[in-house]
Figure 1: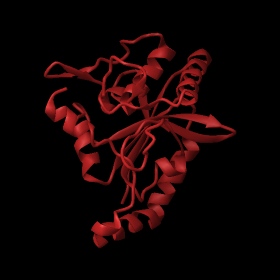
Figure 2 (figure 1 turned 90 degrees about the vertical axis):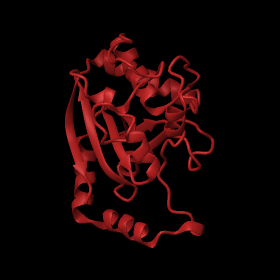
Figure 3 (figure 1 turned 135 degrees about the vertical axis):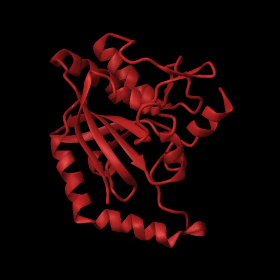
Figure 4 (figure 1 turned 90 degrees about the horizontal axis):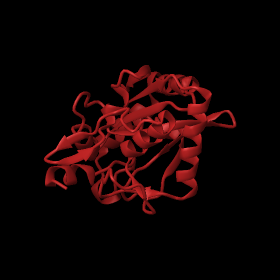
Length: 217
């Protein structure tokens, strides 16, 4: 893997509080301000009410690693992480893969939409949707639940050729490839011979449309 890609990808984000030994009081105040801002709360809660099974959700974290990850995108550098929504018992959960110290077992995550969109830990988020048939939707659900059941882990090597471990945008790409029965529904990016799926590749395609986009205050 080229060094530049390796350095950027190994920083894969996970939301976390600043460590006690390196507390940045301005950053903490900014986090609390975003979390308590009425507009941000309204934007998050309104978005949650719009979610459907099969939606791709994207976000931009607050730390330096999130900025670096967003710079891997070729077309839209707004977001640094992604996942897929499944409605379960009437509530949206986001399935996704992250690395880092806040996910030490590296297993696939199933987080509430409330947590995934938290303004405390994010600067922006978006929702994108495909027109899925019932068969496609069920295929997507089956694939995602199978990965979760198998306790698949985060792929620190970001190897698109393997399926035993997955990184966030690879997971979304392969889930929809299963649903569409088309592995070419998006094209992988290439850098110095290394192929990867950029987060923006997933929603800049003509197959998807934007449902909601927010920049937190």
